[in-house]
Length: 350
Image (cartoon, rainbow, N blue to C red; front, side, top):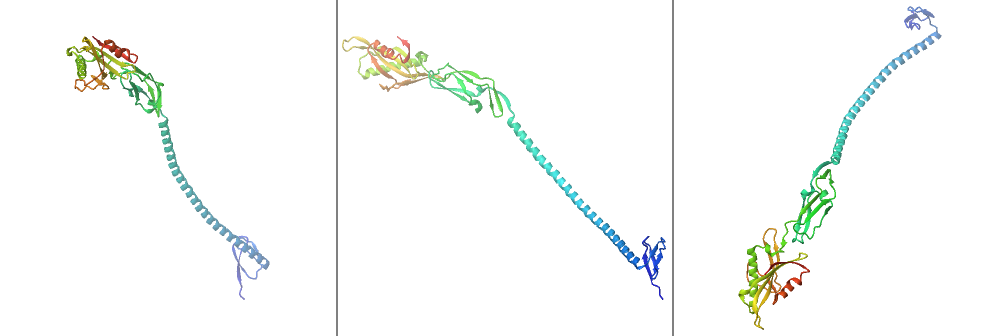
């Protein structure tokens, strides 16, 4: 009869032990443990074996799962680390750009602020660019101030003495009300705040006929005499030609300097038609606005409101405004009747 041999694992040491199927107990050849081969023990043994196998399988699976989980965690950690590093690099790079932009903007702002707040001081004489022009005739002239400084200076209020009714030799004082002014980022400090100007360069009415050169004055006298002769001939008035002469000359200037007149009194002898006595008559010849020019020379206008004298002469024509038979009448007409409005100078009296 054949013997059926089986194998069992020693529950004590785990060694494989061969045994005959009919035996109830055996000893382990390796550790000497007694093994129970009954059915009850076999079932227990099988369960234990199964439990051992399950434990081994779970251990293996746990090891495998542990390795897989660890690898996944490592990969995830690496990715996270790479992301963090990349984000850090980007952050540093962008931070550097932002810092440069902000720094540049701050520096620009500071420069602009400094440029708009920094003040430069400079000394200046405002009168270097201030001028005065004069208009009109001496005695009735006006002055106009031209301030060509920067607007902050030219717009400053200036105190001045009279700018009207001026004559050559008068003075005008100009004074700034401050000694400093700011224009933008520049502060101007005035080296001078007050200056006095002397009026000059004005044409002047002649108040003394003797200021005219003798040669020119002789021509004026000659014209006056020729005019008187011409007028006497026109009215068929009897006269002695050789007796015409300049008897008196008056230079007169209106007190408001609105006019000037030089009156040449021409005397002549005539025969009175009633008593046939030889008497003296007088013509008044007026030169209007005899003016001494600032540039040199003279200018003479002529009244033409009564008579027109067409003869050409050195100075042109002039007007005989009236004729009188006595000197008292002439003096009253020329002097007494107008002295309240005119300043009269007796330039010549024969």
